[in-house]
Image (cartoon, rainbow, N blue to C red; front, side, top):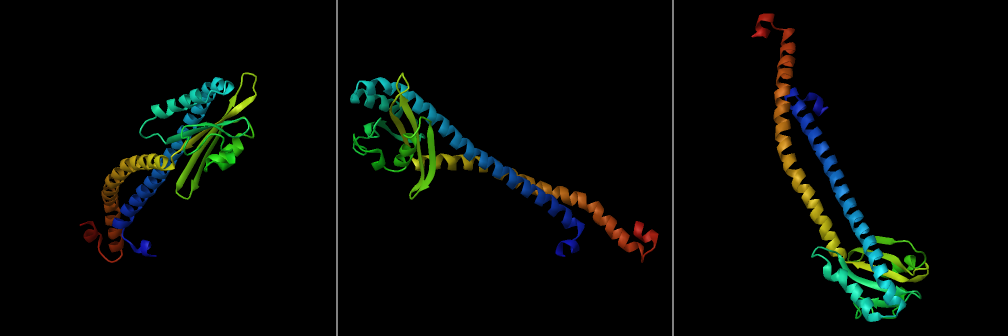
Length: 230
């Protein structure tokens, strides 16, 4: 009822402003959703590539039971990671499900059972050792996001030698997502601040003739045509 009683000078600008706001909210939501989805997809793709590369590099050291060479293989991706990379550790399980080598031997010692690994490594290890597919897990733990990936290490004949586990820092990943959302906001908010005043101004310009026409029609019944035309 309140909207019906408003003048056209307010109705049209309000309608245009509402359309701009709704459109901007929908577009911003889609952009944020896409940014979050792309962030997860990119991380999952890089994790799969890294597990495949490590699995091939670890094949010979595991066949020779060369723990030191395997440890050097794990150090390569960690040394080459960027400052914004969430990768924080690599664990390799042998065929029996025990730790063969770890990038952090003090935190994850050799011969530690997979079930005794910290989460989310223990959870993804249980899934990964049951088949030969790549696995990626993204969940929420007590301290924030928890991420891990796992892939099989196969011998030339296809037999399983072990499993590569990738441990990710959830805080770094969350910061990357926040940065992506902030970038979207920095694009969307200035556009919104510009379009709303322009929409209001354009609405007032469009509504002015309508308001004048409505006012003239209201005077027709009780004023002379000459007075209405003035």
